[in-house]
Image (cartoon, rainbow, N blue to C red; front, side, top):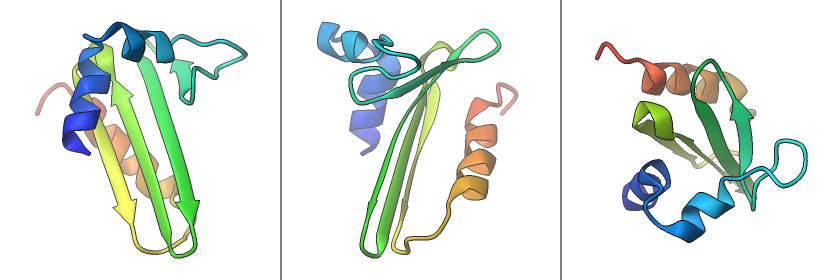
Length: 91
């Protein structure tokens, strides 16, 4: 997953870069794409029985995070906290 995240952050591949372009509202090709203060927040998440995952990439900041849990809980607070750490530039 880290290799995949690194490719999403780098956007060196034309297909990856295309998939991050919003096509309707804030949805890219399988990605949620939101404009923040000077950077994009690109996310994809999913869940199945007993498992949940979230991938967030911040290309302009050169960072991102992958969250994998073996519990289908509401991960909103966890995602927001880890994203906050990933967006820090002073670490």
